[in-house]
Amino acid sequence: MQFSTRVTPNPAKIKTGCIVVGVYSGRQLSPEAEALDRTSRGAITKLLQQGDLNGKLGTALLHHQPSRISAERLLMVGLGKNKTLSRADFQKLARTIGNKLSNCQAKSASLLIESISVDATTNQQCAAQLVRALLTSTYRFNELKSKPKGTSKGPGRVAFCISQQDQVNTIRKGVRLGEAIGKGMKLSKDLANRPGNICTPTHLADEAEALAEKLPVKTSILDEAQMEELGMGALLSVSRGSRQPAKLIVMEYQGGDKDAAPVALVGKGLTFDAGGISLKPAASMDEMKYDMCGGATVFGVLKAAAEQKLGVNLVGIVPSSENLPDGQANKPGDIVTSLSGQTIEILNTDAEGRLILCDALTYVERFNPAIVIDIATLTGACMVALGKHASGLFSNDDKLAEDLLAAGERSGDRVWRLPVWPEYDAQLKSRFADIANIGGRYAGAVTAACFLGRFTGSYRWAHLDIAGTAWNSGILKGATGRPVPLLMEYLTQYIADQKAT
Image (cartoon, rainbow, N blue to C red):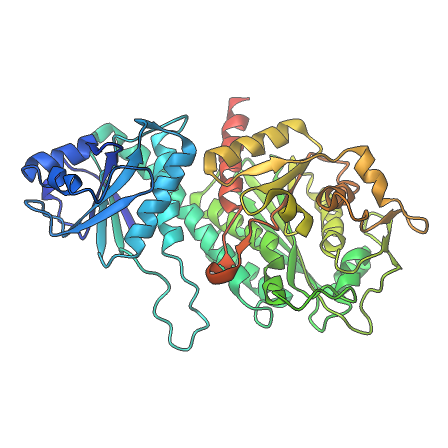
């Protein structure tokens, strides 16, 4: 999909496959719709009087061959009651536009929505969110089908048509940001949607090296021998049950000042999780290919940041392994020594993500990071707590947590903070080791975060539990690309804050 921005004094003369305008509740026309209505001698008003569209937010009506308008189709979308939309309402509107355009046969589309006002949101942010929604709605994962029908539907060209010349650069910046985020989300979704027999730790390592060939990203891969020499006993204990060797993938992007401390992203890269000896139930086990969505997020953010040429230094670390039952696999009661020197009693082998993450969270110290954010499909307990709407947020730094919460609101990729109090940490006590890898039945998402917190004392840290948000099940099964938008929004604001100090 190609995007453009242009000034169009007379929207009725735009030659396009589909022109998009807004209608408020009560069939009140937006300024752009009024202009088209005048040219068409009231044709839009007549359509609305027929009762097929009342302007309710999220509704839409597609009309073919509109009278006296050069466009082949007219798509009217409901804007709701308020002249100023909330962020959530605008995000719903963007999804509506994306879904409707992806399901029509128009080869091009022109958006006439310049007059829409969104609370606490700039025109640049609006443009970025619209582009992101359009790219999301047209995403298809067909690369493994014998007769693929193409990777996307919808228009090949989309134009943002505006009346004010002084807004062109603003909209174009938003479009470029939205495209970068969309490309990052696509990479994240492609990696996550690939099955475990293809997307192995070695495959992820190869993808990291391929990324470095196309973008200004430096990649290095640690193999099992190197990790053994370093003392990554927790990570390597997970891979012992698999024939696929573990990899520690390190990607670096230098977009900021040479001496500026980087933001580090650490993503769980379990390319398939059967639970090990603590075997998972058979139902829906195929979805455990998505246990590497944290790692896929790191790939997506690195790609988006490099595409956008963000002015920040980034380090992306993806510890990658499989977790399978085998004669050499971890057994409940085993004790392993982590890179930090802390010993861990493994009471449940299905709590393996924290074992590979803890060594990566210790390894990241050598980069002297300003911020560390780990991303992981860590616990079903977080899904029980927050469902599919928000990712779980845990942090040892209030300012960092507040910034991530705010970024979630702005991007629509929301998070909700949960505690990491000492009372929960006490649940991880072990009689035989420094720490147990589970904390009992209750507060599983919190105790998992507390476990990771034991390895993050030397830096500002946040943990995102994306078990509920990283993929959809059922008929819409597939990776979502979250939380790439959240982290890109956070990084954009982080850069602005750094410049202001």
